[in-house]
Image (cartoon, rainbow, N blue to C red):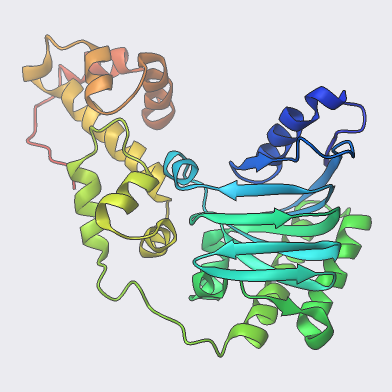
Length: 327
């Protein structure tokens, strides 16, 4: 369990402390708190991990939270979050849709697209955070269900979900990883059921019809040496959302970010074995393949191939020099 609270923080330091707490507990965000309010700002978060799912309780005075395109472009976070309003009220805005949440309401939002959370008074929420890949495997059109309010008073599955989260926050399972995984899987199943029951009749769009996996792969291979290559940049250049990009890649055994680093390491390994690169330093090879430091390159190279680059180069020089290409 992790906890953050402004209670013991001096008033003048509470705003920066809270911004850091929100970023640690959830995803990279901008958070603005009122500066002219007569009431001292207060905020507290309690978070518990349950296998791949994170559960949290947040209680705070008024604030505005933003997930901006700039933050998305710099991060590879792919997370869905579901807010369950416990007290007070708040507004969620994403994709030109808006959900005004009162106690007992819940709504989904997606970290791979910009969103706003607006609270003009004291509020409490439970928040469920789970990897985007986990939800998309069970609910293919999850992106279309964001910022759509579900009222627990009108939905049995949503009410069950709310009660389950409340109980898990009060008395989390103590049976170890296997129990955590089983409970988390059940929680995700109820979450999917609540979304499908209440939002399954939406006119959903399929924005991947014209996208092909090989288009993404080709762009990445062509730009592997770009040190700024990221999920955000790929999405921007291909004209798709980050969530769509993750969905295109979801059938691969590894994430797109990890695959990019693996391909860079493969390219560097091939350069180390080429006679034409004998006079090129290891650091130059590292920078050539998009690494920002030789230390990072050496560490990840050793983790991937089992030996440091210097030793790998020495070994490769005595081997035949095949014509290798990235595929």
